[in-house]
Length: 142
Image (spheres, one colour):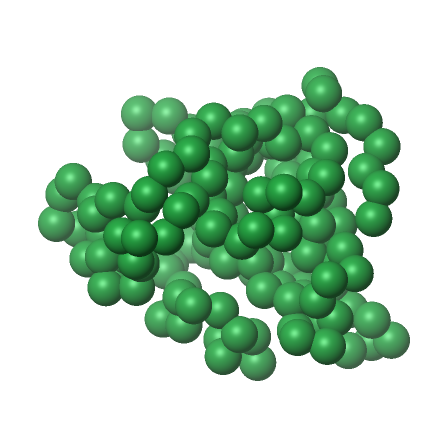
């Protein structure tokens, strides 16, 4: 249902947890969260999609903040987002801190995930990495 509305329309990897936001019992937004177990243990947003009729009214930001708060408070692990979406970059996200600004680059190793990302990303796309900082919590105005 949400695949057609995200630039990464490939399938989700194994171990991804998916959540939807409902309005009047109808799905309007989707978020997928990946758990990374490398040298650091953290979670990251794999996909965030809001259906076109519901974009621009803050549903995506609310879903993102809710899931980030849930994961950081319950699992005590960092939670990251890498995005090129101007609404999220400029938006009042509350407790998110920018950690990197730049253009996307191909992965360093030739893993399945990196090869899929190389096929789906544009080297000209400006991206921003952010970490959720619940200690900096403030009211988010939507």
